[in-house]
Length: 125
Image (cartoon, rainbow, N blue to C red; front, side, top):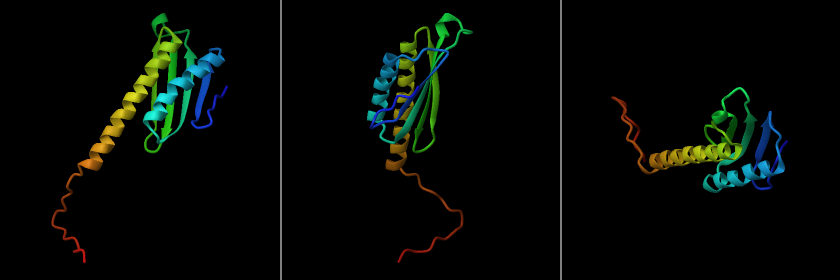
């Protein structure tokens, strides 16, 4: 059930779905893009699910739990085809990582002044 690369930890699980080696490889290949953009990722857990209760357009669900330094990312994507769901999921995670990186960079490059009401700070010697 697990597929692990030497350099990056990607765990793929199938729910109500036969997890083929080609599907595992596809997830690993797509996840490499995320590792390239974000070096702080510790592990990615991906669940691929075939939900027979949903209509055909939302039958295949891909869920991800991305563990990284800072708050973890949880998201999912669904479509009528598993490969498309995986693509949508990776795009969504990529967008969140870019947005988070931009916020972090903005805070680092544009610090905001902090005001202390009536409190005198000791002088640096």
